[in-house]
Image 1 (cartoon, rainbow, N blue to C red):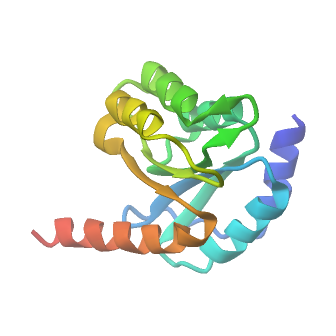
Image 2 (image 1 turned 60 degrees about the horizontal axis):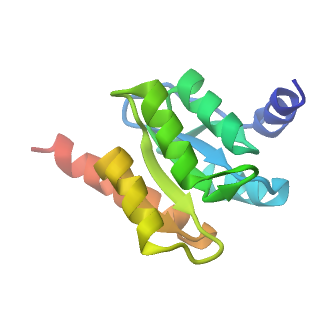
Length: 151
């Protein structure tokens, strides 16, 4: 209940537009200052709708199931879960509707961890990024979408 209230407070000024060309985005991070900063930066991008935020791994999984985002940026180590746990759970619950994952890394992760995630969700694992790289990833993804629609 408290998480839904904080989501509502954070998102109340965000204008949602239902347009197929917009990227539906879920953000998962356990630091509210980081979430607020990401929202401030991302909501300036006209082709992205932030459809939800989550502050722990279980909430990330629940929101993916409920909100069906196209893309997820989530902290790799978030609460009691890590990226491997999250992608395995989402894959098991979502089957064919796995969103594109971008893991926000603040510390190094091993090649083995990356391999396990890739083996679990394949090309749905897009990137390991820092918070500063998120806007570039969104821009590159939008360019990719546009190039595919022009074919």
